[in-house]
Structures are given as C-alpha cells and as structure tokens.
Amino acid sequence: MGNGRPIGKVKKIKYMDDIPEGYKLLTGREFLDNRQACTKVMTEWAICLLTDGKCDGPGYGAKFTPLSHKQRNENFGVGEMLIVHDEGGADLSSFARAVKMEYDKEAAKLDSNALVNMYLHYVKGSYKPFILVSSCPGDAHGGVHSRVKKYCAEQKWRFAPVQFEKGREADEWKRLWKLQVEEFACNVVAGGKVNMLEVKITGGGAGCAAERSQNMAQWWIDWIKRLGADVFQDLQGKSQASPSWCPPGSVFIQIGQVIVDESSLTKFASGNKLEPQRNEEGFDFELHSMVLNGKNRFWVFITEPFIFKGGKWVRKSDESLFSSGTY
Image 1 (cartoon, rainbow, N blue to C red):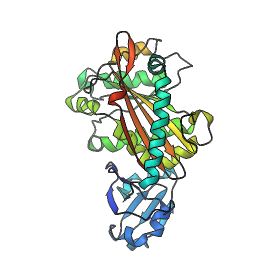
Image 2 (image 1 turned 135 degrees about the vertical axis):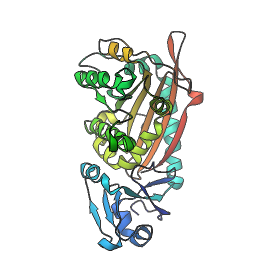
Image 3 (image 1 turned 90 degrees about the vertical axis):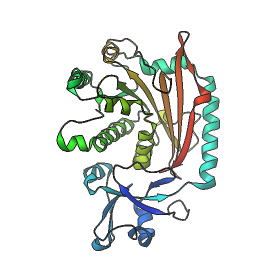
Image 4 (image 1 turned 90 degrees about the horizontal axis):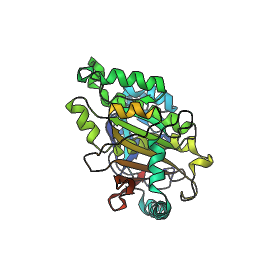
C-alpha cells in the first residue's frame, strides 16, 4: 500500500452504498499490489470503481485503468466499488487529536454571530459561500419544485432536488442526488473555495421530510471517501484553504446547513438574512468542518450546532460531533 500499512479486508459494494465506517475505496496502486485478495471478492466479469480509476475481474485480465473524476462519473453504470478496511492506526489517532486541539483553540476565539451570519446573509456579487439548495420536486405539493428550480437558476444558485418523479429517476434518486452533490462540491473546491451553504426547503411529501430531517453529514463524509484525493489536489497550495489552525500538509472545507421555507429563500436574494428553522435535533444552524491530510490520506470531520437565543447565535460546543478516517 502507498502509505505503508498492510491491506485490510477487501469488500465489494454497490456504487450507491455509503462506504461503511472504518473502510475506504481502494486506489489503483492498492489493487495492483493486492490483486489476488481483490479478485477473490470479484466475479469473473466484474468491473469496479476505485478512487482513481476502475479495475476488471479475472475474466478481463484483472487490469487497472486510470480514470479522471469526470470519467469516473461517466462510468457509474458499472454499479460496484472495491473498498478495504483501513482505520488508520496510531498515525490517524495522532493527526485527529492534533486537529481537534487546534480547532478547539480557534473556535473558542471566534465570534459566533459573525461566523453564522456570514452564511445567512446574501449580498449580490459579494456572497462568499456557494449555495446548494435541496428541495422536494413534487409539484403536487404546491409546485415548490418548479418555483424553486426556476428561482435558483435566476440567482445562479446550485439546485439539487432530493427526489425525482419519472420512472428510472424515481428509482435511482439517491444515486442521482449524490452525483449532483459531488459535482457541485468538486466544482466549488476546484476554484479554491472552502465555504458552502446547504439550504433545505420545508414543505413537500413525507419522504422528502424524512430525508431532510436526517443529519446530512454522512453525505459529505461519503463524498470525501469517494473523491478526497481530487478534493485535496484542487485545494492544495491555495492560501485560503489552509488556515492557521489547520496542520501542515492539510486543507479544509466548511459547510453550513440550514432549513428554511420558500419565502425566506426568496427574501434572501433581496439582501435579507435567512431565517433558519429548528431541525429535529433542536438546532438552527450546523457547521461542518473537514480537514484532509494529503500525504497519509486522513480526514477529520467536525460538526458544531448553533441555536439562536436571546438575539444572538450561541455555539453548542458540548453537543459537537467529531469523527475521522481514511480516504
């Protein structure tokens, strides 16, 4: 393996399955160095995606073919991926502790009101975080899909619905939505941007409400597990991607998340602040911070919730979540 650790247990999973905790996608180098262990879990004519390409089953000669991020998206139809158990060991634990210590120090000094309001206020031409809007496309629920989609196109905001109505799309909405999120996020970081805002719109059918009520952090972790090497490469060397609290050799990304109604989103484009609604966990705003280490391919993910209380934003640091892994 490229990082020197012995390879763990190899599994084959469906392309749209979330990569389990403690696992990561294989690289082409890992496949070539451990071909026997990999082909043991593949069928004769299997084709599986890897972080940097695809690999063929024994019937095709057990070959590895390098692919760009765009080419991998175009090859999603292969339907399967090879993953390997890799918890990172002592090196990951040490890196994660260092990140948390530096992050906690920096967070204690920040103005919570200034931080949250940076995400919630839009001024045309100067709004920094890029926006990902998710909504229910069911026009049977008051036509919110058509209105929001058209509105976002006018504002040049990215819109990714969380459900689809037509045949094959309805059956595969999860895969299609993930692809939209991946494309959106990769386009943002390719430009050296490190701030994103995910806006979820209230209203719609029961399935949409259930999806919105979940903490979407897992989607972003899965994105890093799939495309972390691309993300690191796009951000590496850009000064705004490496704040003082970020360990040497690392980059970071921050994603704000809010739930709003359609009228709040409309006012947002006129210069008004978003009016977040409290989610099922009791929070008005969540900030997700990702730190990626390029050399060892480690990631650290920090979720901090905020509530609006007494006319100001309050950080609920006692309810923050912290996780780490490899990509």
